[in-house]
Amino acid sequence: MAIEPVIGSDGIPVRDPLYTFNDAWTEWLAGGKFPVAFFGDSTVDGSNTTDWVRNTPGADNVSPNAFSRILEGLLRQATNNSVLRIYNAGFSGQTAKWAVTVLEEEFGETSAYRDVKMVGIGFGINDRLGYPNEKAYRDGFKNAVKHMIGWCCSKGIQPFLLTTQAVVEPGVLTQYADAYPMRTGEHIHSVANEVKRELAAQYGLQLIDLNKFTELFLQYSSIPLGRIISDKLHFGDIGHKAEAEFIFSQLSPRTIVADSYTKIDYSSQKVFDSVPEDWLTMPDSPTADGFKVYVDYTKDDAADKKLMSAWVFVGSRTRLTLKAYKSEETANTYVLVNGILQALTGAETIVGRLEFGLYKLEAFSGESARADFRGFILE
Picture 1 (cartoon, rainbow, N blue to C red):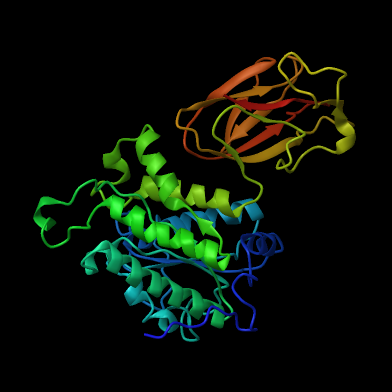
Picture 2: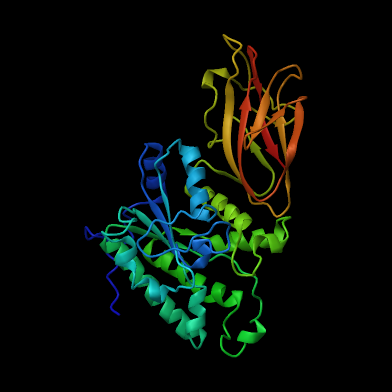
């Protein structure tokens, strides 16, 4: 099958992207739909999630617990946009070689996804079963992905690449040992995902390394593997939620990624919904708890006011303790962590211990004329 040239519809090479993740983010903030699709196999489709509905080419699949649907909800919350769309273009049991035959059906003029702006190309897990050796696997998979990249660009759709969800397949299942000698996680990692990294570099495409994150999630989260990946191949509800939160962290430039000691204060560049600049205090020397800027301000009223918001993705291999700080114990300051209220009982309050996942942190003055908040520390 001939490979489409990797040229956009206006003649611009792929290295000059049609769209970027930041285009998507700013369009969403402006209220636009700007649909983004994830095109892959059953691990994208959500086949091990609750209330899953098998996808069919050209239809709009909204399986409620697949990562695409959860991601859509998170992004709608973060951008205050009820129309943005994340499309589920996953197909159980399918390969990249198959995918090139249904591109028009899935994203063309008669499809529910005909207005898609960006397509994340996955696949690679099932592909290893159709080739006799690693070289053939690499060549066949690479050609198919290149074809998809070229087709997308020729249609004015921006492709990006998505490494595969991690699996628990260190060795071939006994019954498949002779028929499918490459049915291991290492083959997916060393062939399909390496191809995606090479093509991302070659064509200047953005890449979301889902494989690396999901490997860490399997290894270091406190959740038993049977609850994450019950059949050793497909993530269930918990796993898809974790994937959605990780992908959110890659799409939203507001996200603070914390994998070790992290301070979130008024000098953090990614905080939002914050107090006016003129409310800030910058002491001559840092406070005893290390803050060099904070709010300790008398307002004109006693209304409850938001003092700070931050999206934080915890990617630490161990749990991080979240602490919140204020100047005076008598202040009414409280915080919300993913909507759950925690009053600040002293100058330093331990709010909780956070592991892998996305957290929305918010601080409020309480009903008081005083606005008193220094920030958060994760350690």
